[in-house]
Amino acid sequence: MRLTTLLDTLNNGGNGPWPPEASTLTDPEFDLVISSLIPCRQNDAELWFAERESEVEQAKALCRACPVREGCLAGAVDRREPWGVWGGEVFVDGVVVPRKRGRGRPRKVAAA
Image (cartoon, rainbow, N blue to C red; front, side, top):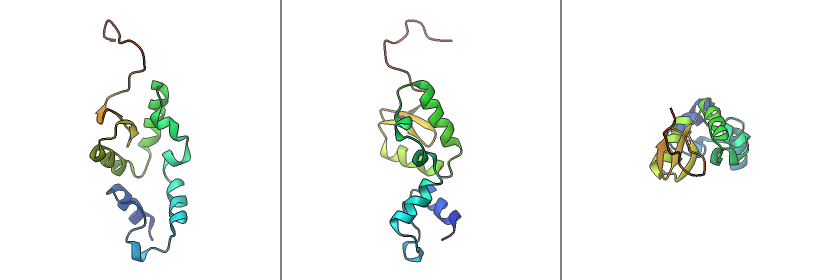
């Protein structure tokens, strides 16, 4: 299987070798190939669900170079992911937001 075919499949929302009958990769081999390509499999998964704004920004930065970013984001939008960083965007209550606010009381005056 060509790597470009694999990445196109993932970007289009597919999961696993495509077309299945043409693939010679087993599930563990496929997982190994994927984990070597995408940052959310190479780093601590907690980073994509962090509370600190600096960690959330780090996860977003790692997503920018991901070859399956578009498919990840499209899938998260379709599923209305409740929270976390998906495809380089932050989700809160199933909606993409520009940035995640930390815990605590809201500010009395909006930050400039």
